[in-house]
Length: 347
Image (cartoon, rainbow, N blue to C red):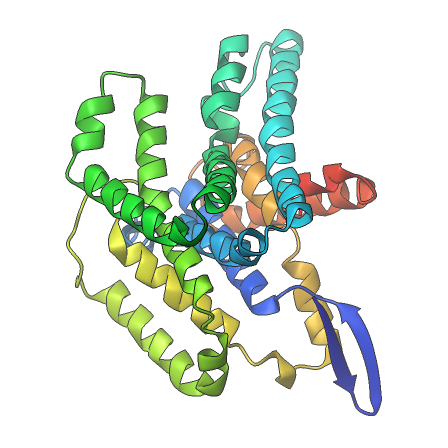
């Protein structure tokens, strides 16, 4: 997106992403790092774990912005999206598999205290989990699967696509939360039944976001900016502090609460008035929010070694260090590979 900024009498153009949504992505990514790393069992962390909306909101953002690509059958944008997802999904497991096996051969030590087998690598590639140091790639697995699913069936079903998929989302929701999925798939490995559960929980979020994007709520938001912003903030406070939804069991994307939380977070951050900031501040925000992909993928690998050597208790300060380490490694990697598609490993 290209925006024009005014600085006094000077006007200039600078390629910018949607800064409100990028700030939201950064906030969500930090919450993920915090929940994976911070070991303390204080009230604040328990509250975060009760309100684990970060993965759900990532899905909501992703499929909201996928709608124009699908509705206009934009093959070029679809190709770029799949490259952004497939490159980290395939390369990170291979890199971690090789590095950890070299460490074990040379130092007789790695994250797993054993040689990683080809079966470990195969499982990771098939379902996005299996190698613990990069288990977070189940998120990419779901995004890739749903993206292809949406693209193919929107072409086949045409005008009936949304109705059919909304019905499927409702069925997925019911099967997940009445316990059927777990009872049926528990005879298989943990990787299988967890993958089915994650798919069943995230599909309703994806189709909800896609459906909202299809009705074009932008004019309503812009014309009622202040009212919508304060209503969104009030609703977020209300649902995070009061149990107005049934307390159903599931994984990190549990229940309809996550859909509403994701929606109102998305709206609130979309309405941040960036026009009150000068161009330098906007450029700083643009820079510090750039490497969410790399931070998300790399922190899970780094956290074990950081705890092992420097921070056994998993402190909050350690969490900040972990985020910054992941950020700077991603920044270096992006600049090295900025002219190649390997940049998608980091940004």
